[in-house]
Image (tube, rainbow, N blue to C red):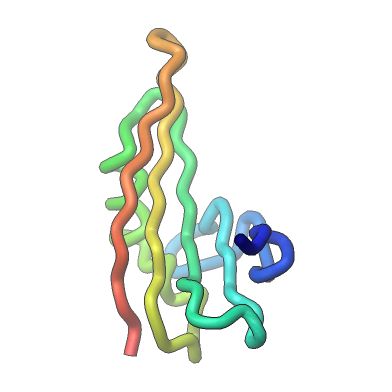
Length: 94
């Protein structure tokens, strides 16, 4: 199993589309067929809101020139319930 740091270049607060993507992970050329990842973090909202923000603000534009799968991950922390919620969606750029 590969560790994220060894298979990816990790960028925090990457300017993308109409804002900043919280975390973008771009696979290194020697990492095989791992997907790129865009992670949006939320506080007291929901994971769907995070995924929709990635799409609405066109954060995939930060991966200009990248072709392949991208894993979108929306993660929310609810302060009152102290629970995390995560939603993922796999898309493909040609």
